[in-house]
Length: 330
Image 1 (cartoon, rainbow, N blue to C red):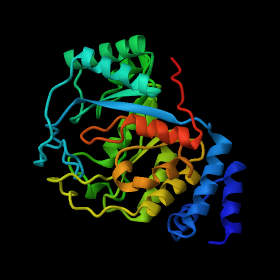
Image 2: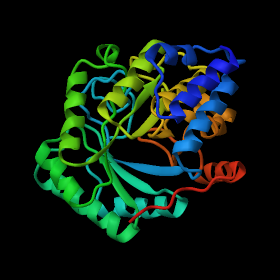
Image 3: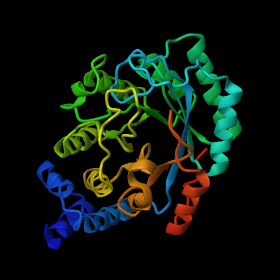
């Protein structure tokens, strides 16, 4: 791609225009040699629409394992033998303590994530509401959660206690979804997003790269998120888990991952886009390039069933880049 073409795409987006799916495919298939130019232009877009600070978030695996869904990448599915630790909903004190630790480490928001298809209304859901309320009051951090396919009434209850965002990943492109899960559909995912939005919640939704999708399907995923009006997007890279059907998937090349990140920024110029699970094992020494190549968010402190960088390592990376973590607005 000629530099002039890349600059023209950048200027069009900055001036309020948009790139087409065909142009996005040109970006995501650039050579490794041309990728640094694309990262610089993606970051130019981020600088124009976003903040210099980095939005750091943290999560806790609030209920682990025994999930009846058969997502082919997931260590917590009961369909596979992965040796993952299984437990019911953690007590409130444990979760609140984790939220306070995340706040002290530099996180602006903290999410409770539960395994399983959903959380039914009743004592368990009420405990989650109570715990989230305590987190906001005692840890002074923004609260988020991912509880699966919940009802409108539940979404409204979460809105009423001041939930910042409801997390509902679409995981991949609609055309590729049947290849990764058969116990629920992409339409189920879309319906959950619409329910959360109907309740007045902001939705955090992204997915995972490395699930056997094509580059064109990554573009399709980005445009799907744009169609849904998603403004908070976590981008994960598969960290293959032994025992799952995707346990032997080949790792993605770092430059390809970074090109994908940059392409998402061109398509979704106003969104908060964070690098999340799998960045440590896939990007390795190039992790900082994500935050100078269009992304403005970072998940810290580990993931659901895998560990991440020490928080001190991530904070040093931000300091070396001359960036500050975003402060929570509570």
